[in-house]
Image (cartoon, rainbow, N blue to C red; front, side):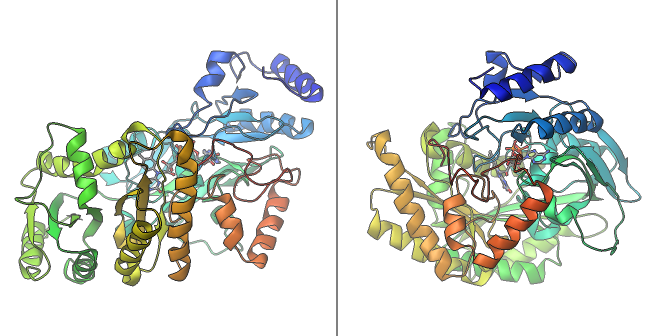
Length: 485
Ligand SMILES: Cc1cc2nc3c(=O)[nH]c(=O)nc-3n(C[C@H](O)[C@H](O)[C@H](O)COP(=O)(O)OP(=O)(O)OC[C@H]3O[C@@H](n4cnc5c(N)ncnc54)[C@H](O)[C@@H]3O)c2cc1C
């Protein structure tokens, strides 16, 4: 175990003695596995790692932690991007990993619903939905590692939000273990239920600060029998947004993804893999990856071809994938760009949103302001622009010493967030607040929002033992992670 206050050390030792041997891990090698997140930017060694196999086991553990005032942080697949899932509380935290609660409890193709345990990897849940001729539409690059509990707790979005909504829109019910060990059972697959407050919504997106999700009932949709994918080149972000507005009207709600990538992003992907080639005949300033899908007797290909032919005043060039393999190659450009940006080192991630109608101006204003204030910063711009969500990331120049990164990232974030504020947007459209965005969030949140949020936290976690210091400041102060970004 790590260095602990003596009272905690005794309490944990008593817990280890009372619990089954493999429920709590404390050896150095094991702790290391749960100490660093996907980005590599956040490190925090837990006091111990609890790996419950059932809701009952977790409930029992949480009762003990509550009695002994031991701080706890839930952990899914560690792909969250705001430093929320690694241990960080100054006096130490026990990580609760949901990895052993990974069953799909049921899939019902008539209810179009599935019930999944929180530790189930998103891709596994999607596969089981597909086996029942359905889809679970949460889709994004980390789906092979992230877990359902993490998706619910971060209100994950992804490529298909414009058609199917965020995780919040897809959760029908939840089972949650509270800070004091009580189990809140809201695990229903009802489509309509207006009995009182919708408590499950408080847990969704609350980043583990109000309870530990142990299972979720999720909406499914008919599995599309046709999927068409196109990549088009355009002269500007403004043209891309005009194309989007037309696509919404002309593709009869069959549009399932509309991803913007600026040329710089395509070049990052091309440089990262020798087997990727420039997808169109020439280079264009802006690209959009479009996906439409349908079940039933729709001439989807004809629809997309007709739509793009009519959009020749906006589109400079384009390709429609002729096969699933070609479509996968187009999506690979998008994935490789995300993986390769930052060249394996640190970079500034933002995930802001503005209204769809002001997105083009927002991008132009932000890139201009960055070029003026920080000409050395290398912006990488892409996003789920059908939701007004853009990732305007900043990579440091290759020659910059790492010691100067933090100053560059803070200054760049300030420039970007300032323009978000001017557009009435959000500094976090997807990733959440965690610890990384906490100072920026607290600076902007109005006093009543903060007061109500604190009262909610007090009601669910009166001793402030759960994921303390994420979203809201802890009693110990804001941002206690020196490595956080
Ligand atoms: C390559 C990549 C692409 C991404 N793309 C997108 C994207 O397109 N859209 C998007 O929205 N996000 C995206 N993300 C970030 C996204 O938030 C996470 O990938 C995912 O939702 C987190 O799941 P996880 O299981 O990894 O959670 P973790 O990282 O383990 O945890 C995330 C937060 O949830 C809490 N938590 C985890 N499990 C539970 C639980 N059972 N109960 C209560 N709290 C819990 C943790 O304490 C932490 O605060 C991406 C991340 C990566 C690495």
